[in-house]
Amino acid sequence: MSAATALPRFNLPMAPRDFLARHWQRAPLFMPGAAGGLDHPDADTLAGLALEPEVESRLIRGAGNGPWHLEQGPLDEQRFAELGDRDWTLLVQSVDHYLTEVSLLLDDFGFVPGWRLDDIMISYAAEGGSVGPHFDQYDVFLIQAAGRRHWQLGPQCDEHSRLRGDVPLKMLAHMPVEQEHTAGPGDVLYLPPGMAHHGVALDSDCITWSVGFRAPDYRDLLAEMVAETLADTDEQLYTDPGRAPVDDAGELSAADRDAMLDRAFGLLDRGAAGRALARWLSTPRQTGLDFLIDPAHIRAADPATALIRHGGARLLCHGDTAWLNGEPWPLNQGQKPLARLLARQRRYRHDELAEVLNADSRDLLNHWIDQGYFAEL
Image 1 (cartoon, rainbow, N blue to C red):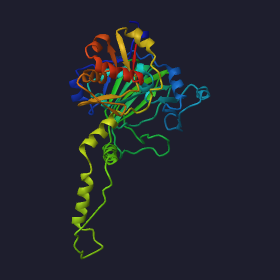
Image 2: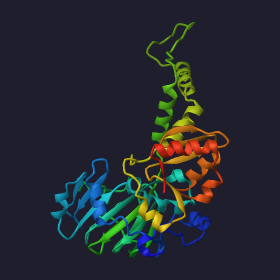
Image 3: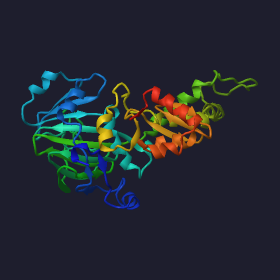
């Protein structure tokens, strides 16, 4: 297979158990030559995505102490002709949702649950381009696709770390440098949540893929759980028949307080909360199903592939239900093996499908193909 037809790949250079024990959410890891097949998308493709109104994109200009400028997409095509040769970066979020071929890289992260994956952001930077010293609140694998990028790593940060107040970005006011790495094509840098880092493009054609992971905020999850419960709950008003006279009308008694708290918390139904959790975890960051799958490159790189999952389709299984882009699909016994295969990976061979297809599962698959979640090659 030639490099031009290779699909994106990532090879963890150690046993997954060792990586999870030593590095995951603990310590950074620089992995030279751990990735490949990253020739697509190129700079022109990324710029084209940034013109689309449904695609989240940002243009950042600046270096060093500034000044720094931030522009939110969609961008105008003429804007790129005005940027010059240095010190700017284009960031395109959720490229895997729009370009299915990009999403195939995520199969190589099967050492963590699929619901933990969020999206792949891709940046294109001119020489000197950067987003400044900052930290993310989630795990990230920074994969160099083209050009070179110099990385400086600093200490762990949190919401109390001091940020600059004179720039339109969440940029650290000061970042002591504790490690440095220069990443070339195929090199991968893993960073745990909260680690300060600063990357600067060393070439005029610097493309970096960022595989980000979901870190659900329990506040958001609780809000979803409450909303799911109340959606099917009739009005329940406070009542107090048989109440005795009070000694002090201005006091909220402990008995009244506890009674109302007990009734309110009692409304939170565990089954509804579980549905809310599955719905939230199976909802993609962006809706990308309007971007059709281009099968030619995938077919050339892997002729054995018979079926592909759209990059904008997010699927997980729990018990007797498959959750696809936030919607529950009850499964019968004949459909479960197919749903689990489709949730476990993103491309499927004829022999894998033959083992799980029957009358019931074929009907389900055909329905999902008709809705654009999957495509036969």
